[in-house]
Amino acid sequence: MATPMTPERFQDRWEAFKGEPQQVSGIWGLYDSIAQLERSGDILDEQAAWALKFSEKPPARPGPPAPSGGLDPRGSEEAGLVGPKIAAPVKPGDSYLLVNDRDEDMEAYDHTGSFLWKVPCLARGQGADNNWKSNSTDTPPGLYKLGQIYPDYEQNPNPPCSDTAMSYGWYSFDMVELENQEIKVGRAGIMLHGGGSGCGWPGAWAANQALLPTLGCLRLHNIDLRDKVLPLTRKGTVYVGVFQEA
Image (tube, rainbow, N blue to C red):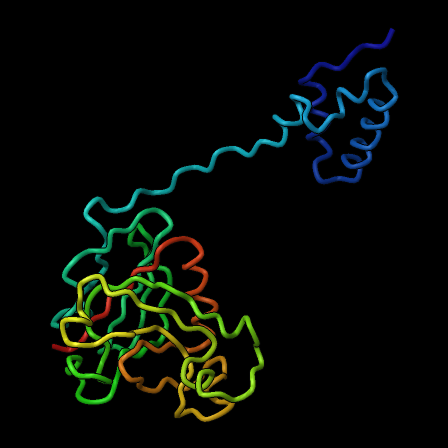
């Protein structure tokens, strides 16, 4: 008389051949054996209790909580600069881009304040380094969040020359002011984008085009917009803190 395997023995044999050809062939053999049984359809039904249980994904482990008072990752490099007056109200999945115009870079942090990466960035317009109150001058300091995304690269990675492609590059993002920092100085329309008309064509569309001053927007290399910033927008809200010379 055959001796039935216990659940423990069945599991041992399954795990012993994990990732091996025997495991795959064993599944097919088990399926064929079940299919030959009376009322096998009840067992092989995709809505059977065992099948539904097997298909369940374990709940995701909760990540570290966001700071209770919001996130403000400024450090010693921002000493003496004018920046956001409020912390970003981050939640899990959100991120923070810190732009230091003096150092000409952008640092990214997750919702816990952990450092992610740093890339070159300009927050430069036309005029003096400490002028952001006039049209076309530097990016007004303060806290923003990224809004509408314009994925020109995804619509056509090899476009013909146009004013839009040259000015904005692969991607552009609306920046939503959170401290009325634009409206206070009579400005609007600040964005984060790539490109650069001064680079000519196809230079403005190059992955690592030269970073040239804008009319007040933030400018990154095209490839950093695609490979660094865009993935963050798919995880949560992206806040942007801009720091300028006083």
